Length: 285
Ligand code: SF4
Image (cartoon, rainbow, N blue to C red; front, side, top):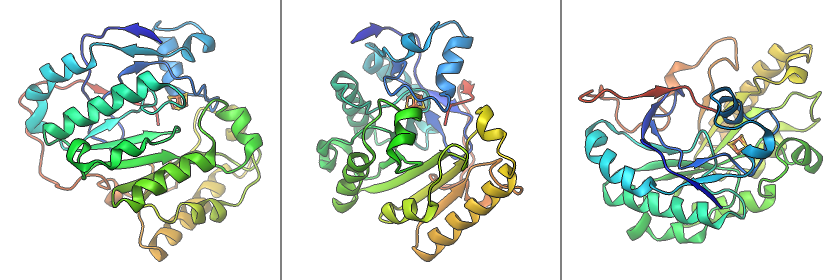
């Protein structure tokens, strides 16, 4: 795997339900074509030139040293750390990424910092060791379809849907907290599918986040785009209420934003004390 070094790691995320975030890899071999916002940003800021650059991920080798410096600086401001918005922490079949991610979660846990994790890969069973990785973390997968043709076109190198769900359900059965990000959910002109069928597959999860597909020309041309997302969000809300699942509808998905659920991952609502200036960065989703 290619390697790079970075000057800093932890930052305050601009995503409404997140807090601090880190990205310990540049690029992502999943090669999503929604398109991937993180890839677009990497291109815009000159870090990569092409899609083929993006799908050759580079591991940030000084990640743990950076955490040793930054955790003491931000610790009293961190509610939780999200891995990751601009890459994937359990990139499918990338063992170097998996190993580094496990070390990060272990280090955060030792410092009594919980994390939310999101992947289109597969969770390793090691995470069930609560004495090493903690028991307050929230493990999530992205799942927006069950259709193989859709996967081939839009997230060609990610883990198979069934394995992804199975690995999450395993952690759930071990008593860990789980969630599913149904974002970016595609419009019917990209894939014809039954939203309820997908929801039923993930009804074991503790939390669901649902959001529309942005930045896709074909999707925005779908003539009932607005009504479609309003209706889908209502289906998700009803399903979650009926199944005792916490939920949040991402801002901009429905006509009216539900601010009351943006606290979905925050245990406390105390105002954060800002003792050090924190970088705030708009993230991928
Ligand atoms: S998994 Fe996330 S970061 Fe990786 S290519 Fe897909 S959208 Fe981009």
